[in-house]
Amino acid sequence: MEESRLRSSRGVVRFSSYQTDGFYDEMFQTDDVPRPQARLLLETIQSLSDGQLLRSKVAAERLLLQMGITFNVYADSAGTERIFPFDLVPRIIASEEWTWIERGLEQRIHALNEFIDDIYHDQKILKDGVIPAEVVLSAASYRPQCQGLDPPRRIWCHIAGIDLVRDGNGQIYVLEDNLRVPSGVSYVLENREVLKRTFPQVFEGLSIRPVNQYPSRLLEMLQTLAPAGASDARAVVLTPGVYNSAYFEHSFLAQQMGLQLVEGRDLVVSGGVVYMRTTRGLQRVDVIYRRIDDDFRADSLLGVPGLMAAYRAGGVALANAPGNGVADDKVIYAYVPAIVRYYEGAEPILHNVPTYLCWKDSDRSYVLENLDKLVVKAANESGGYGMLVGPASTRDEQRAFAAKIEAHPRNYIAQPTLSLSRVPTIIDDHFEGRHVDLRPYVLYGKDIYVLPGGLTRVALRKGSLVVNSSQGGGSKDTWVLARPLNGNSLPAEATR
Image (tube, rainbow, N blue to C red; front, side, top):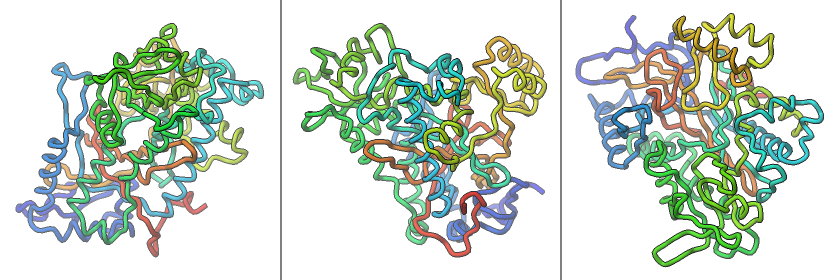
């Protein structure tokens, strides 16, 4: 049967023939039975007048363009900016399940922070043989320059984005830890504004947890990092510039927090203090929220000569701390369950996807024999680049990846191809299921704060598992319910 065709030709989008196709669907338990948390949304969509949903979709796209919510595509020869595709059908998470996810994220971030601090100090976890030393010290994101560094409050990962996926049996896994420069939170905030205008009655009826407090939470966290004695601490947002793919987000967050957006050339270090060039002369900077990867060149950091010395001396704070990327290396990821057990003295709440490490002879042999079945990833690539999705790959692509693995086995991991959960998505003039992931955002200052929900990224290409915007993905709003619903059916792990 053809997927989710319109009941009539007048633009009435209906779920009457929507099919889950055997995948875990975030909105439906079966083809025609919605999950309890989605019932009110379903009733609202079904009650819309002829063509109203499609008109709302067009209006939302126009609004996003007016708001300037775009991203740059490096691979595009024209260098064009594109609207980050947005779908009106949200992902809904029951309050009970979110409470469980939140606890898992808090545990994981705390453990990863302890790991980073240990690696740049006593390296007890290496001495105790929990992780092979050569695996950590050979990571491309390990920074010897950070050895002995003491960031404010000994916190290294102030802003994190943890990618979660759900497989076919409802199990939620951590897919990746993004600790260096996680992006996408601006889309969370703007998506919510669009949905509130589209479905105001659903927001009132479901009591959805707000997300608009994120900029104030972020600003509060940044200010807690200011050097001792700094009164009226001044923070800035450091961007690589207008050609960066996430420049919209840099400018958006700076505006939302009331901070200056600066580039490296706008900053100067004098006497161990960082200053910002302004039309009124130099102004001291106490905290830098960096949206640029580590860039060490002699005493220059992030393109600012003298910055590393000022940071070491406590003259300025950086968020995130340089060197924290050692914990989001995809090979280190495979050891996070052991990291959690070591520092937290407890079993991980959130599980990893089973992972094969190509530096191990037995794992590498298995991966090379099963490239057509596995997802292979480079240890330090992101954005959907540097990976092979085995079932969708050609023999030539598999041979090319085999050569890369054999040449640099430390640089590759492999994982089974998961049957990612789906959410109904408007495709042209009808609904089809599309695969999604979820990136919750975590702030770590005086305490750990998890933004309710996060960015649901959706693979808009039919059958695709790649959700990244640079690879044709889009986004959805993520609704976390503020209170439990009677009769809610949750995955087994969320009830433990």
